[in-house]
Length: 229
Ligand code: SF4
Ligand code: SF4
Image (cartoon, rainbow, N blue to C red; front, top):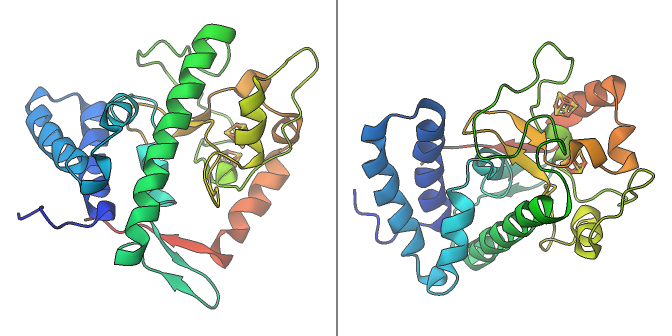
């Protein structure tokens, strides 16, 4: 396949697909395919600088590749509009967004290690190892409720967030934020969890089963279309 002129959306999806398979299935023969696709993504003209940030973020087992596929890199079908994410004029914005997501992810990941207890901050220890995610609960960890522009960044009593977390939570990690940067993915599974679940903002703690049903029912009003490269 000639990948030299592929759009950033295709380069990202090509990589994300095999990287998630590798994380899920751990087949060593898949490494070569992942490396090749990752190198092609990093060779994109817009990543001449900053590729080390992308390398660290996108290869991390908690980076939400699957969620970026479903949002940033998915076509959007609104009631009176359609946005094709393979449009050439969108390419600079999408590459910038991927860089910013990577920076935000690494910053949050580092501060969880430095300022909080990564063993207990969320539903699984954030130690880079595979753990059993919670099962048998009403929340399926689909991550849809965290596809939002922002939440009021008010922490629970006794918790103080680093200042920039307030900005990220309120929707300032990227222009036109459509996904919370605290949403992590678990080793390529289509299951997503809040990286700060046990200290998440009050607004997120108040989101219960009823709100979940409402959110999932409203999904069709503004639909993302995930297509594979
Ligand atoms: S609360 Fe509902 S929408 Fe949110 S992750 Fe859980 S199942 Fe998905
Ligand atoms: S803080 Fe956690 S629960 Fe709240 S929107 Fe972000 S990822 Fe979702």
